[in-house]
Length: 169
Image 1 (cartoon, rainbow, N blue to C red):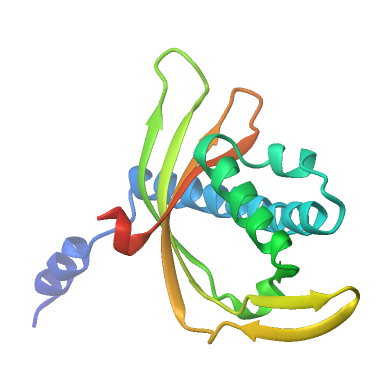
Image 2: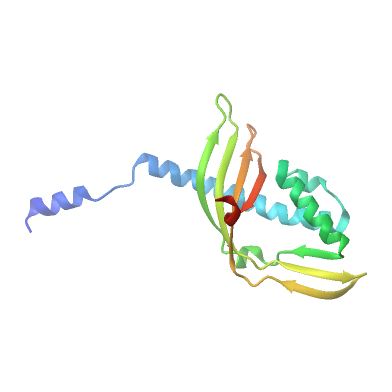
């Protein structure tokens, strides 16, 4: 193999271009927004279950995601159960696949549609007063959901819709 053959092979190798760099930067920013939202959703769910305070949920969820979350948490409260997700950052192994970014024309607002893959280590604990009656841990198996994450002109993010991947297709 001569010098020109090696040069041709080297030049034909794909190089990252500006579009790929922009996509990676966008995906990194979306990942940071998701991590912030996810942690705040966990805290908000805990506040709602323990204190009945719905404001933290309204700070991170809107639309059907807010309605479904409150209904699920109310159902658990009625059964004297509490949902928790211990050590999410260490166990969840979350991976995000950005499917689409839809910008609203003429604004700095839009919707990010993504799939989130994670290992589910959540726990539902049933109480009788302050006494733990039973715990129902998830098996740590991989789950996936399609998430619609809205953003506004101020750079605030909200979850507006979540659908298990099996039902999203």
